[in-house]
Length: 340
Image (cartoon, rainbow, N blue to C red; front, side, top):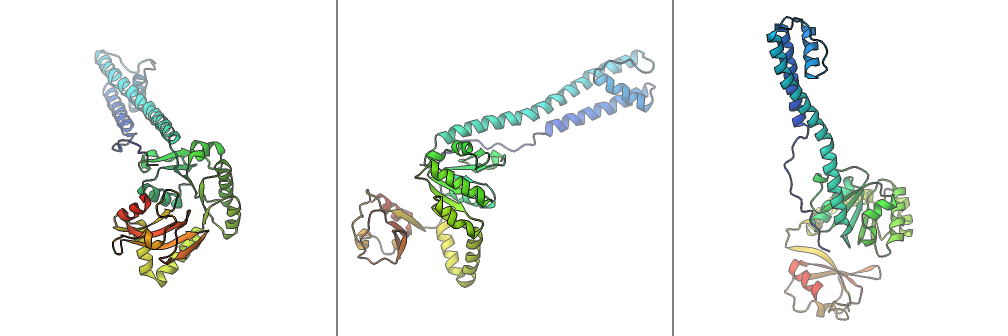
C-alpha cells in the first residue's frame, strides 16, 4: 500500500517560552520603576519594593509613606501598567503550559485515525539507534511505518508519513492501536530479549500472515525466537562484526553492495521478485524469462526455493510458483519483470 503522507505543514520552530520570558522582563521592569518611584517619593528601598509588590498584585494593604497627589497619580499608573503586565504574564504562562498539551493531544488523535486506515504497513517496535536506522530506510523506500515506543517522542521530529503510538510494545492494546492485525511486517528492535520474545509471540498469535523480523541481543535467544514464529532474526553485534571483517577482506565488494542496496539515485539496484500465479514466467526457463532483455539489463543473481538459494542459476532452470528471484537491474527492467 502506498505511503500515507502526514500532510502536515512544517512550522517554523519557535520558542514556546519566549513570550513568557518577555512578560517576566516587563514585570521586572515594572518592579524596578515602581521601587525607584516610591523611593523618590520618600520611602526607603525595602518599603518602596514592598509598596510596589502590593500595588501591582492588587492586594490592597495600606499605603506606606505620605500619600499626596503625586503619590496617588504615580500609584494609578503603576496599577494600570503593573497589573496589566502581571495578568499578561500569567496568561502567557497558562497558555504555554496547556496549548502545547492540547495541540499534541489533537495531533495524536489525528495520527491514530490515519493509523486505523493503514493496511499492510510496517510496525517498528523500539526507536533507539537501531530503530531509527530502520525507520529511515523504510521511509526512503516509501513504506508506511508506525513506530511503537515508550518514549513520548516529538512528533515534529519524525519523518513525514511515519506515525507513532506511545506505550510499551509488550502491551497488547498498544500493538492493537498500531494496527497489528492489518500490518504486513513487524520489526522488533527492542533492547530486551525477553520483551522481544513476548512481543513476537503476541504478534504471531494475532496475525498468522505477519512477516516478523526480530533483533536478538544474545546468541542464545535466536532459536527461541524461531520457535515463537519469527521469520528472520538479526543479531546486530554479529552482523556488525561480519561487516567490519568484510571491509577488511573485500572492501570494494562491501561498498558495491551498500551502494546497490541503499543508494536510491543509482541507476542499477538489487531487488527480490516473488513468482506468483499472475507472473507470466512461471513454468518458463530462466532463458525464456529474460528473453528479449537488453544485454546486461537484468541479471538473475539467485533463486530462492524451499529455503535455499540457487546461485548463478542455469538458463534452463524452470521458474516455479513461489520462487523468489534475486535480480540486479534498472528500475524499468525490474518493474517489467514484476508486471510480466
